[in-house]
Amino acid sequence: MPASLVVQLVLWPETLADWARAESLTPALVYNALARFKPYHRVRDRLAQRLDVPKRVLDHLIDARRPLPTARRPPVPPDARGRGWHRWEGSPGSRLGDASSLPAVRDGSSPLERKALYRLELDIAALPASMVVQLALWPDTLVDWARVEALSAPLVYAVLAGSDRNDAVITRLARRLSVPPSVLRRLIEAERPEPSARRVPVDDAPPQGSHPPDIAAPGPCPASATPQLELPF
Image (cartoon, rainbow, N blue to C red):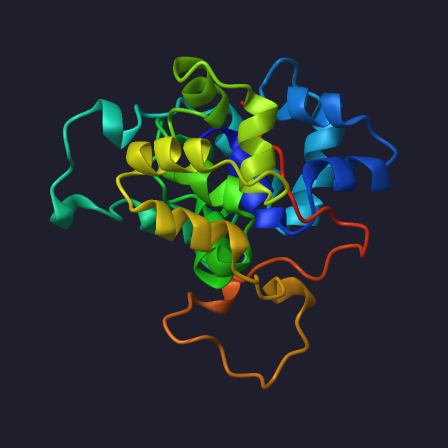
């Protein structure tokens, strides 16, 4: 996945645009930094601090070559999944290993990639329908699908936001997702829980099946965070 989507998942329910405004930066500058148009080292420094990772971890997420999506390459045997995580561990006081020890191609073992997965584990039920569907469609995008179906992308987003109940769009999108239309309607219409970053903690016990504390999600975000996300690619 592109670095911008990984970082957005880690930050959610805060958005990259929210963070940029809080830092007096333009969202376009932040997206350009994550897209590697220019180094923008100062932006990377500030964003790494917000993500609670060393800058070199964010640098790797941005600069390392991405592998092909699984939908576009042969499947990986189950016993090969998760290999390489040890590269990021390091010893106490170390710099998480030398840069030369990090994988040349992103393999899912980066602390930021693990944080994004943890965000999904915690908050999949709280994510807006458009983001859930976008993740299910990826590497295709909702805009790609709308274009193939000769539909207006704003109409598709409006349907997923629940502001336009268009049964024809729901039926066609459900067919693309290989689920009954009733499942997609439920995703759109069901009440979503509060994001974990905004919930009042019940106790200090970690969620069942949660990851170790070193990859816990970032702290609470500003109250101005936007719940419905638009995902640029």
